[in-house]
Image (tube, rainbow, N blue to C red):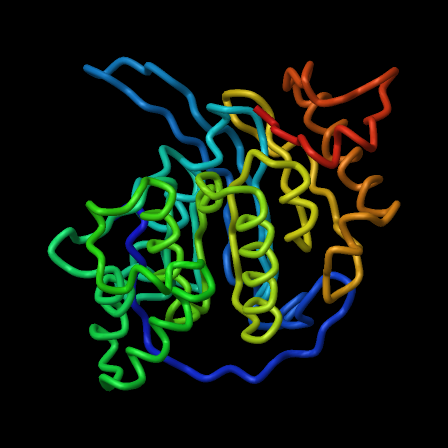
Length: 311
């Protein structure tokens, strides 16, 4: 369900060695990629007639421990691709393998956690009990569940709302509860579809930093959909740029920013260069970025800092 994480077995992770790109796990590993997408197309039909061709000829390998952002104009199929990986919808052509298994088997084996654009919370449970839910399913004991749930709610600045119910919260606050729940058990593979879009800018930046910290410590493989170019660059080891519909991968930008990434990263010249590179790749793929702060083909540093919508 949207925003509701899929539980998986709990395992302690030793912090992996890191490089400029992030955790040095699995890149070129003999075990192969964690996610392999080959020749994936997706069409939506009605009454036997093709209505929309959402994706075309998608090929992508994701190594263990990578943080991959998918970015492209609205309607290009980013979220559809994420849902195909999570076995929430099936490709019309091509194959997806996760941890060497079909996406369907990986879902059955509880290999991923998910958080999507809309929160899916249970109104009859308190905020704290919503965050505890996957931990209950995993069999964590009561004190451990409580400690972890409160830690995550403090992270998203909802410690004063432990005993509130979702219907008593704003939409943005509900999404923050869903994010806390998805992060609660540090899943091995995390699929995230614009999870921070409803948050204010300062909270969003803190959540970006916290997700990076968790990624660095656990080696979690993350697939992340965003419309924000600066967010994609700040978070990712690679940014996958997609074209307008039907969505195709037009370019993959390697992000060579050093780790750990901090507020200083957002002020560095290399960061701005990468934001510009992704923006230009989007333009080359047919995206309309009239509001992107581009002057004679070069992104304005000032506007790049505060903007970055890809569509």
